Image (cartoon, rainbow, N blue to C red; front, side, top):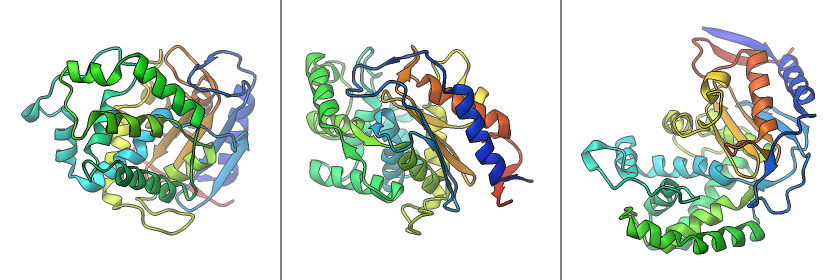
Length: 309
């Protein structure tokens, strides 16, 4: 079953969501988000046909934070079968690993994911693979925020991140310092909402970049990438994210949120002020508003198609 929504209704929903949320004053900026300007707010929507709708501060670049796991997972699913990814993550009962350390301040699973990228023992090749994947997905290069990266490196050193992982027996597939450094670098890469939305649209279009026409990955793994987003998305909010929006998403300490509905759309929103769960207050509300106004959900029985008026 297919449901059609006009592009004018989509633009209207974006405009109305922006107006409904722009005066929100709640939230604080994460100390890691060095140089962030309070009050900035932008929304970008990108469709698998190459349509892009931008509203307000969509050119502001913010640290990708945990959104970096989206392009990273596309590499892992390209290099491994789904069963192998599950096994390497340590969540498979057939290959039980020690539980991840508590209170790290960083994602142990994100570090393990970088360690699992091939080739082993070659940080330059690993990083080139990751950086080129981001460029292929977005169609443009994100930027490394040196100040944020230095802050994260110091934080990791101060909290003895490497020692904690080793002491707890947390299994990695490559050298710990190598994997941690690549992970921290990825967290500090900056992207705008337009770049994030274009990355999401490439995933929504089964791995074909709608703007370049290039095939980035095998479209069969789109469901796995988005499934992982749904499973590991923002879950610490008072209102369950997937229940209230129906859009699998990843968030960043920088204030960005990226949501993807395969075959339909990608939406990215940004505002640096975060709630206690570490999720952008305005960005979350804006995406929820748009999903509600257009009755969008990855769990709906009907597939949405956006059409010209």
